[in-house]
Image (cartoon, rainbow, N blue to C red; front, side):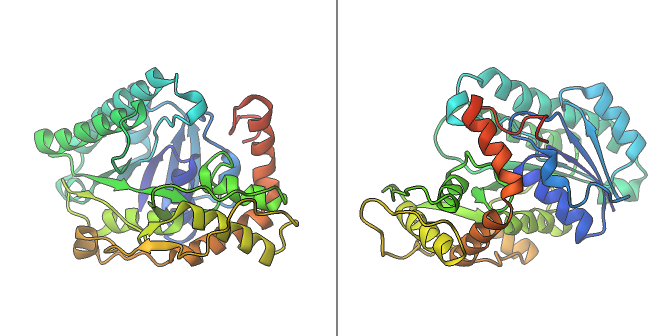
Length: 328
């Protein structure tokens, strides 16, 4: 199996590459332009594999992407490239529109050109899987990714491109940048810094390896034209996450720290939900990790892999840029 992954140096994209190469035995071509939320250090485990290759490229470069598709001859394209807009970069809306909308359009056209000349059996087996996000607040990032989803559906309905969309919830786990909410808590606990549980609305979270398994289930058994929404173990209370991270870090060898404010002794998952709905019906996928086991695995990974996240945290503290090429 030969698969092109766009955005393969990002959080979910790198997890896809690692699982495809290490567990699936697939041959992967990773296309990534290496933005502020990318790091090649996330791919060290497979970097020397003869079944993995990387090209630094912008998905907006249709001609070069098309040439690479024809040369690599993939059985599928998994489109995980997206412009992220962390809070400090909300002025970067034009970049989100360019990458998420124009980039998706140009990638779709390159994929359609390649797919249209394949033999009939390979056309039928080919898949274009777009990794998107569940709806939430109306932001430039969310709007641009919603526009990209509409383009993917339009290319399926208008041209027959066998495309599938995944709208996943917030995801966490190993190799997530320390600026993100759960890694920020975990790295603070690793350093013995004070952690203050913050009240807020319960949110849906999904462990990254479960998310990737859901994507591969869509690729294996999903229906072209479908939009799937993988879900985790239910609604998770944010104040309970902070308290649990502190407890887990202390248990697994984190530096002594402090939990400021009232600790939450409530349940981590405040409302159970069906695991996957139509995704489970079509593919049989279920999340393997509970919120408790996923959080425990995440804390232990950060404690054991300071060499990966500390340079990123230092870059973030220095100039609010993380995932720089000098670190990758």
